[in-house]
Length: 143
Image 1 (cartoon, one colour):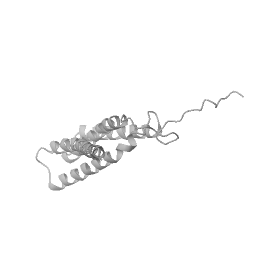
Image 2 (cartoon, helix red, strand yellow):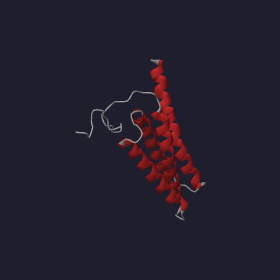
Image 3 (cartoon, helix red, strand yellow):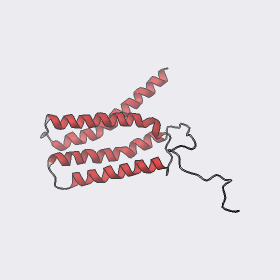
Image 4 (cartoon, helix red, strand yellow):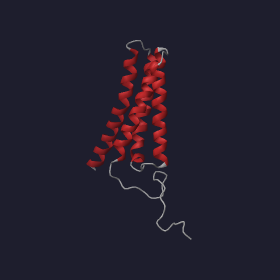
């Protein structure tokens, strides 16, 4: 019973911690020039990211390298990373630069979360969306 509680609170702590990294970057970008609405939206995104990371724990353990789900996570990472880099790197207004920095950090955090949660040592299911397609040894093109 105690082990389940420790795992639950450990997952919750990691989820909150990983969602606070981008939020801190977002807040720091304003340098005191933020409004209450800016912080409200940043907080909403941080809470949503924390819940998404918490929900991603059981999914990450099933994903194999080079499966469909692995490529989906890779494309999400690359899309968020490049979009955040464009918004934060060019001469946009302060609000867009702050959101670009936020998106950039979320894109950087996704691979950390995936690698951390992927190697938890749980058994994987066969024939799942999360596993790559393999040919059976009985399948052959020789007839």
